[in-house]
Length: 194
Image (cartoon, rainbow, N blue to C red; front, side, top):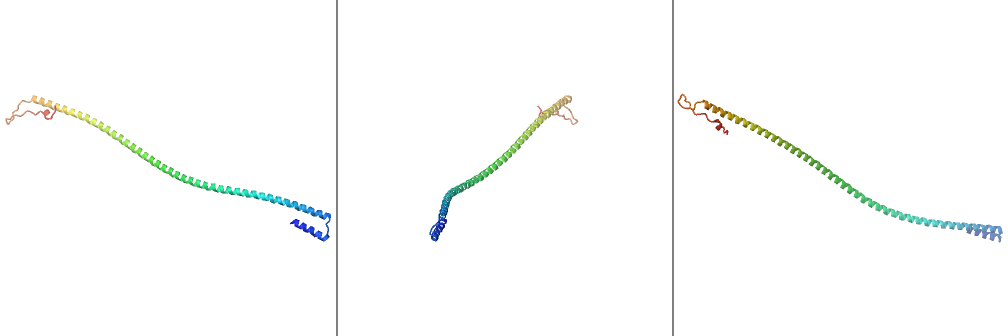
């Protein structure tokens, strides 16, 4: 743009005067060189910006790829998390069921233990009752044997008394009616004592 303006200015000066002084020429040349330098700098800046833009595009493309990769990894993580959550739920249910089975088994064991203790107590009570019954039977047997001996002694005493009475009475006795009395029966034989 500046080059076009400068060329137009130079053409106007030539057309107006027909000639150009050295100073004006040098000024125009200097301005042209400055414009040329500015143009070179602008081109360099444009190249630098294009390079930066290319780098930025590459960075954007790389970032886009990374975002896509992160999105894929995020989906995989979400899928893995869902599977782990389902597994945790299953394990939690399994643990709960196992705890319930263990609790029931413990209750059954306690119940069986209580039944065993009750049975043992009942057996002990029955044994004590049997022992007491045996002791009572032994005592009754001893008392029976003692009573039997007393009865035998009494029978013997009665028999001895009968013998004494039989010796002291006449063999036959006459009553007022004229009948004879029979001797006294043997009470020992009647009692069945040997």
